[in-house]
Image (cartoon, rainbow, N blue to C red; front, top):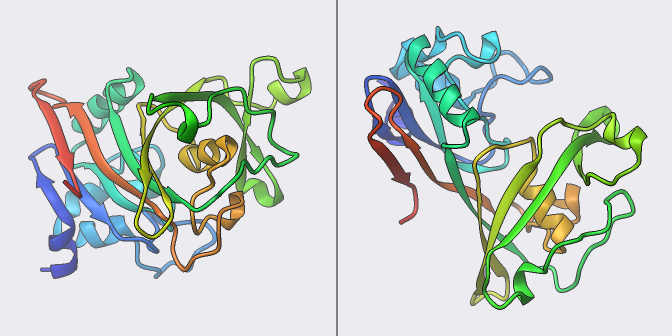
Length: 246
């Protein structure tokens, strides 16, 4: 038995697992990585081999319902059967799968990158404690399309033509200034695009510490963690809520 994988499993159900990914390990095998590189899926598959045979989004992703970026830590839901995967996917597509993240930023002023459109929403830090809903389409950007950029509905047609058809919303709550001088944020979303939280926070002027790709302060680690998931059970409808850091 793999003790590392066992320690990562926070919730076990006959239909799915909720596991805690550590920062620095890919969620699933990456095309550019060596075939023997450790992954979250591989580690969990040693303990629960059925997750490797689920027909998920891609053949090499098994039952992983949603991925986290390699430098991001936190909760990932993995289906144990094909039927559970399909039902969880429908729940996610229906906007009933809520993910919550915590992030920190040391930025002191808005970072307006020329490749971002003008930011049209309130500053999360200076909105009187209210939730700020930041929404956009997305397009891939940069060398090897490794980054994303928000796109607005009134963006030029040639940009809209290269953008996602779906509008993605991030609800941002400001948690205040911490003892080390950074600013804390909680972000919630029900449908996700690659780098969504990272790009939306950077767009708002508060790039995540350690996220130099989006203008964040240099750090040895990315200050982003997926701390919670909420969704109805795929077969019973019971509300499932799991938190990593509460």
